[in-house]
Length: 330
Image (cartoon, rainbow, N blue to C red; front, side):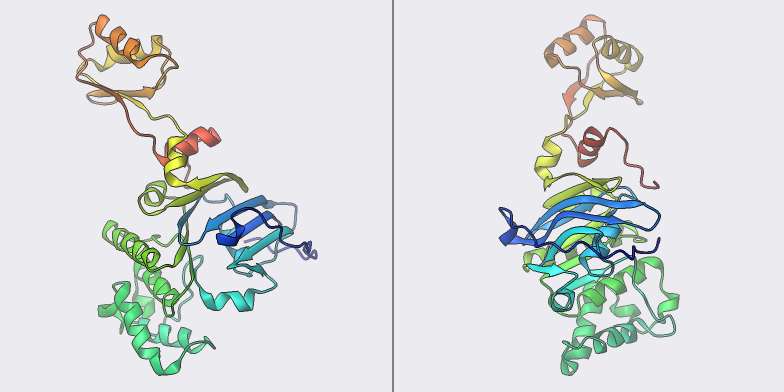
């Protein structure tokens, strides 16, 4: 990661906006420019409602982790403001962090210690933690992330997914008002991903706001109530997940044994991005009555077994908003 700018960050009062009083995270014009001129985050206005499971979406390199590092007081912004739990950061970071659990860029572990001993050391370093309940809380955290059976194993022998779980357990050692997770399902198998989704839902139902950064759109769509989409350091959109998906047009799906002829007719009728599969053709619907489009297929002799528009996904919304695919390796 590039070095942080040594310029003194601009100090401004955090402006109040409607909804800020209920916001667990609120940023205004938050900007980070690294040495050499690289603009990692550009004028971010973000509002995370209390009690939400908030998905922070974007391809790798879109500014997600830089934003999280500013919110956690790990780096200072070049300009703009940020508030976490109603307190300005980085100024009040020390007062805020005891109420925040975080897993950022993977956990830092002592490989020579067991998973349990890593958590005991984490907890001992927390001045707000009660040593009398330390072992009980560590055991509960390990059990909650499915690591109770592996608690005595050295951390260097853990798989990437197990290390992610241990980092999440560290974030859960004490009750938190806010949980910040940066790519928490990284390295997990499908079963592990399902378990983390379930855990996130449980935490939210207990009143914890969860801020979840990911490049996996389907994961966000399954677990999050709200989301924001980043691209090239800028915020593209934010809001309830259902509303973001509703803003995009779904894809037309025609099921037929005559896929070649169906594709030809759809193109003639103005459909875009026509894709032929084994027994169906999908496309972006043209701007005309779909009944007329169906009639054109039938008139051309296409045996239509199914015809309709699939509900738009979050990925459809991303493509519609940015004009590009969601390149997770970018």
